[in-house]
Length: 272
Image (spheres, helix red, strand yellow):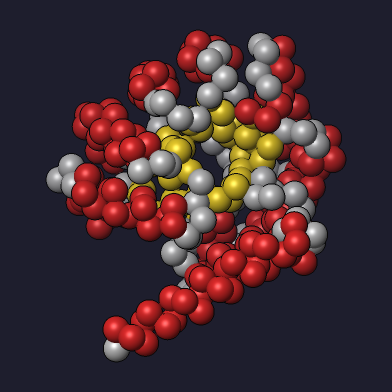
């Protein structure tokens, strides 16, 4: 199955940043609960735009999300912030994004020995993305070899081959899918993760692109999908794809999704 990560709480969104600056944790709770109710297992938090207030916000937000039964993926460029957040998390947590820098990796591994920390390994080369699938594979191999040597479980390594917009290069979607295929062939037990909306950056009808892209990525073996679970068209693609490729046991997820959609429509009609 695919693990869904609700990614609507990102400080690059001006409306979300305003809520974060106001430390509106009631909003954070409601938004997180909505994502969880729609199938998210993790809630992604990116508060980098808060600058000096990033750590305080993340500390409180993680508590709020865990109190309602969620788990968290925290993205930050500050290794010390990631370490401190890992130290307060009670549930499993994902930390990202970690580039291939042995010193930074070792810093993160200081807090990952408790078995509850998963690491997002960002596959990039001197800030340039996307790379050729073969170049990405070499960097991923360095990551996997180093982390395994340090005792990290394969299931706790999340390779992120990065996605760049089709607006920049119409081949970027294919490059990602080819890279993903290579990763799954060479590291079948290592996990992969992707932020789907990046492919459609700058383009109209972004959900249309994401809804088709997620189907292709899942078929290639994508394990963790970062998306807004409130976008019904994208969620429909996830559920339907899993059913078609035989990863939805007894079609239970598909049937439950259809039933839930019918009930939601009935409730909406009553309200009207």
